[in-house]
Image 1 (tube, rainbow over the protein chains, first blue to last red):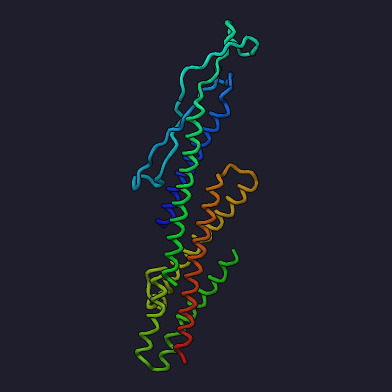
Image 2 (cartoon, rainbow over the protein chains, first blue to last red; image 1 turned 90 degrees about the vertical axis):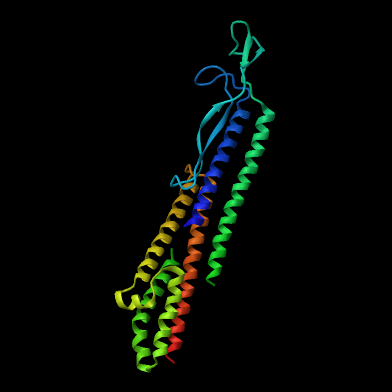
Length: 134
Length: 132
């Protein structure tokens, strides 16, 4: 069922790009988050993708292997009335690059369309193969 | 799932006609038409399996076995698509594209099954015409 393999590979790409959109969405949503469960301001993240080679694994394609921290040190803003202000009255905001995350979001959406096109092509060739028998 | 049963019915029909055809053609006495009958079923075998008509009437049918396996796989595909669709509709964690791709795979499988059924029916009708 090699045509279904093609679809499975493209599906792994779809899942990966969706995860990339998730990280961009999380970064954009948390650009003003000053506290996290681990303590300190939010740290923006980027997904780490790993290629799963054809012919070496039962399910080739791409795998999401983890998250890498992006962005620099927190941005310190003077706001003594903020509940998360430190002793000097500074609040640490996460260093989220909004433009880069928006570009990443667009790239992920385009890559998602690309993988969807691959699945459409694989499906069309399967239907063409059925037409051979007609 | 209702589409599976006609396929099972057709394979039973072909099984019966494959058993009946050699005697009917033998009564007509034409050696060329006896050779013709396996060719018709053999062309179906090329679509979905490996065996020709000779093995179908002799051993009970490895082609029909592989056809049965294919129908079982098709049924599994349809059930998987059904389950993931139900899981998605009831708020499960399945991705939308996973559900859609499983539905598409089931659809392709069903279309393949229908194409094989069409071929089988064609072969059956060909066999029916042989006896005239």
